[in-house]
Image (cartoon, rainbow, N blue to C red; front, side, top):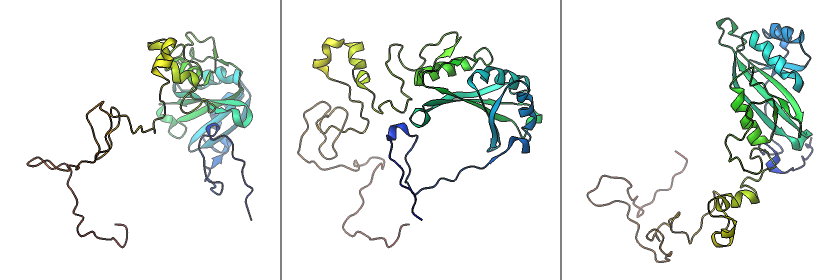
Length: 268
């Protein structure tokens, strides 16, 4: 049987790229009703609607509507899940036009040995806002700011919804899968405009944001083995002998003899 060829989407809009013949092994999911998390689900169902739920890798996952997230977290906190260890979002805009937000909760109650961790999830559309839960879990204050900074998701009633990692005047949201890996046009001029001013663009030129770029004429940031020159000097094509070991110095790098090379039959 020949598998159907998958369409190749923009790789920046995918979490990772895999071979089309590779079939990842999915972690098994079991019903919450067949686990010790069923008492948690029963408590949640008394106060809100649960769209779906399952247990995966020993953690319960409850999918609710966005407006039910604060009530769900308040209920879980009253049940002993008093620590929010993580909160963020996943960009699924290229797949179904939504963000997936998740809230990871932990309990240190010793009696919760087999149900210590759980997760609350919800989906929102691209331009939707989310109710802030910073009044329920104080650590959500910074997590929501980071989520706004990286994805552009706004949180209603947040006490100070400002960027937390990027500069206040930054344009764009770097963790969107549609955001260029090397930055956009604004990013290439940000430092120049900020430090020198826009009038110096023609003099200085745009930032080089390609981490894999090697400039053979740059003797400040790069050195050409066997053709090294002093820092900042004009590159030279003259090849000089490479010194592997200074005389009468502690051994650092030794030259391997090449007069009688040995061919290995197999990898050691």
